[in-house]
Length: 445
Image (cartoon, rainbow, N blue to C red):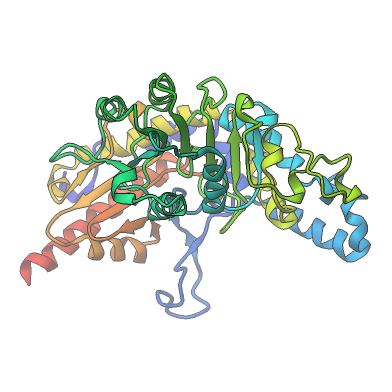
């Protein structure tokens, strides 16, 4: 490992030359660095492309998005309210979600009628749980993951409290086995089995945000539903990342945001899935879920749009919808299957490089599953000896954009739509240098 040279260095150009999706990188703006004023020497410092491996937190901006936004601003400026029905680009605002729902349905493996693009993730989870979490005196418990994203836990806890129940009794949390970082599917199934008589609903992440573990959604869904338990999935880190077949898996409901792997921009519009067999579920209703043909009769008699559309509440943001459209047009140039295939190879290449470096590898542990079928486009590195912050800072100064979760984890996510094997190789080089520098400072002190 002399001179910091990896034995697999020569593979990156060759792998990039064989990558059938490499042209899609040109569809995105790659940030330049230095990025922040804090790291710039002067405002005029010329930048170069950063190594952006943070799509698990915020996806990059598609180059087509700006033009779409400007088109809508022009329609608003030129036509005002008439843009709702008369649109020069065939995107009338009254039906703006239609331009993004069909492609979204393909990505999540659903019928078009089972998907609605609406709202934000946590709000949508609340609306869905209002419809699907119907506790009784006997069946009232909710099975969750112990390390669920805090927003999910807050939503579940508040729903339990809303029903007058005690979270310490009604919420069943599943944890990894002692000494493990991820949850064994067998343990999930055992918890379901042990609590089948008392459980109303299970709500788990498709991909765990901290470890990057991909849950066995089909297997878990089938087992839970065999015990008449409602099954919901938070797909924030799964949508646009892994292959999903929500309809065929008979999932009851799911929700997701779109600003991570779907690249819709910060705070972008979210989405929901309602299986066609559950579309008549009682729900909290709003004007936008009313049948379009009679919506403007203002008769105060709710007539639901068939399917997931009937769960909509307010008219969606036109600007947020076309930001998502800018990304979905890139997705439409390939398939989620091809994206996933590249993702497996790209993340595998990263893992191979990291494991090959024994010298610096002793300073961290990869806590993401090693089996490609059990992870998405992410590796989570758990650092030892308190060097994580120093490593993160040195990566940032070198133009490597990843993210951290205190106290000791750095998450690295090579997104197959815009990341290259060269990106991954350069990351591994910079990580090595950052660790050697951070560890030498730590131990010399």
